[in-house]
Length: 89
Image (cartoon, rainbow, N blue to C red; front, top):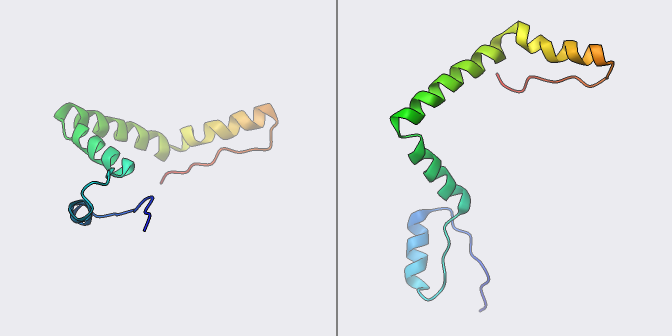
């Protein structure tokens, strides 16, 4: 059989498949690799502090009625019919 690609979502299964089909090339899932990389970056104390501070700032603006009304006021001044919606809770 000719196999072009196989998708595996489990590292243990991927290792077992690789040992069974040794000469074939295997590639890790890009998104899983990216998730692992980002997790390792955020493990550093400086990055944890930065993310915590950024989260506090974002939560301030998303929970403030003053700042959530600013885009709507701008839309009214420009006379457009589109409204910016707040997508975070």
